[in-house]
Amino acid sequence: MEQARDPAEEELASGVVFNQLAETLRQQGSLLPEWARAVSSVPRHLFLPEVIEVGDEIVSRVTDPVRWMATAHEDVSVTTQWNDGRPTGPEEYRLPTSSSSKPSLMLEMLGLLDVKRHDRVLELGAGTGLNASWLAHRLGADHVVSVEVDQGLADQAAKNAAAAGAFPRIVHGDGALGWPDGAPYDRVIATYAVAEIPYAWVEQAPAGRIVAPWGGSFFPYSFAVLDACEGRAEGRFTGYPAFMRTRSNRPPRGYLSDFLHHREDAAETETGLSPLAIVHDADALFFVGLALPDAWYLPVDADDDSGEVTVWILADDRLSWASVDYTPGRSRSTVKQYGPRHLWDEAEAGYREWEKLGRPERDRAGLSVTPAGQQIWVDSPDNVITSGNLAEQN
Image (cartoon, rainbow, N blue to C red):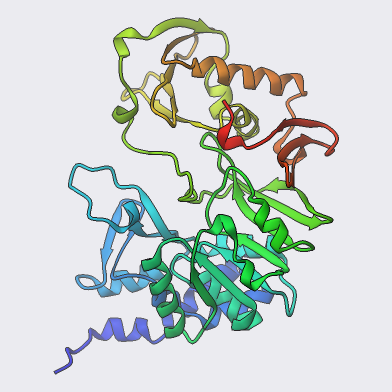
């Protein structure tokens, strides 16, 4: 016998909460008119697993179906997979590896993509399948190809889409390679952050637009919006998205203690540059991140009211680390560094180069992608400030 459903769950499942999501997005000014029908017709809850996580809250559909359904239709990012889906021990670091992005952020990205009627779209990173289903609802299933590196996620995304009555082509593969069998495309969209735009995307959308979260480990919080023409793609940066990193060449992550070692052997110096001048300035972070694409930073506030902050910089390869202690009222900060690289020195050098450029805002920076690699420039493609594969520099 089928178990009776909670009346509240029945009401939620009927579409009341789903319609409320569309209304919330509309009130926020996030529901783009051209996407309103797709958002209103493709229920988000059909794309989520039985257990989801929002912030620090884990919600189970089995134990709390009403809360699960309400959460599914809030304008929040929902984590749906950790550690690539493998079992995780109680003390093991839980790395989010797949999610259903915040709907307003998805719409921001689709707005940048500027899809036109009859466009063919290549999506890299199917995830739950929701974004591909929105695209398929608007453009038609035969106009959307979505590539997912995780076979299990690809299979589930296809099932989710079918349950919602959308049938984009979802395939298993490495997004860095695109999907040449369906080329050419008019639009390419990535749902994960990359340090370098693969040239395969340019080849497969030779006269199209590419939108991808972009940046190295230090600052992966930009959308690159590029237009392709005559064998190259060019454009600028916008927004402040936070997306998971590509699984291709993904740097290790973990607890702070996993990256710290030989603390007693660290070299100690001082600096006149406050670490907060970097970490509290998004433009500084972007340009310093060009010098440190393979290291990440972590500010830690003192657990009292002193206002003291320690900024850690940690190399992806875990061989080097640095710490800078900020104390209010002091003009100089204590620096400790260990390993083959002096990470604070590299960060400060990047900051000083940004100053020499006149402290430009990130909006003045641009990106060009050619068969030779990518180049970052300020104001004009002729004014190159860094080039090559950022993931392999330093």
